[in-house]
Image 1 (cartoon, rainbow, N blue to C red):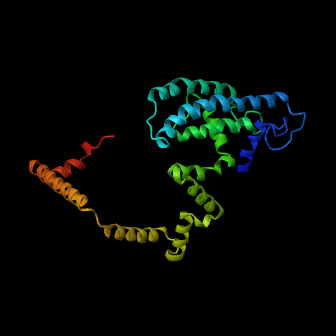
Image 2 (image 1 turned 90 degrees about the vertical axis):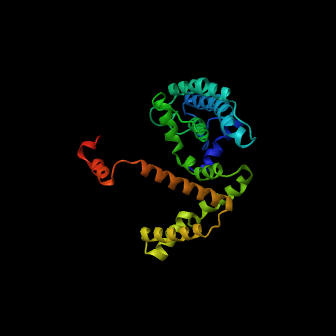
Length: 267
């Protein structure tokens, strides 16, 4: 499924698609089970309202928006209530609604995408479904989030997570360019250099690159304060070594034999 389909499906809720369009992909045959259409729309509405309230405003807002956008600390009491009460209530309900295999209404529908999208958002808040307690929900979320329409978004998501808010527009443009031209990615450039200069031998490539990086790091001038700190740490470490050695009453050969002795081996 193309990623554009996932965005297009949302049009059904605005009323500008055929009411029988269960899957958001075009007009459906009038014989499609009306109960399935109703079920798909109910689950989509549940995701949009109850899941949205908890996953976005109570979890993601506390974990991501407040600290990283507004520079405020999360309300720990509210966050704990969300994790201890609201989130389990939602997961308990979904556990009674989601299938063991496949999708909610037989074929992939707006219900599946609407529910799964919130679990991707929850992952950004470092929340993971307990597969022991909610096995159907955990398996369903993983199954749907592995679809191509979600996979196509991951390069954008991962880049934005590592980028300050003010630079999101630039990061998205760069990510789009790399999707259009895979040869521009760092991994492609590395493979090209390895083939061109090192006969496709990774060991040679890694040795040369490590040597270059070592030279670059050694050429860096450390601030005097940092140099003095490192020198002090080295002196303290040597002094500690001398103290330990001076207090040791066992010669090295005795220590070595005890170290490798069969009786000292324990599993």
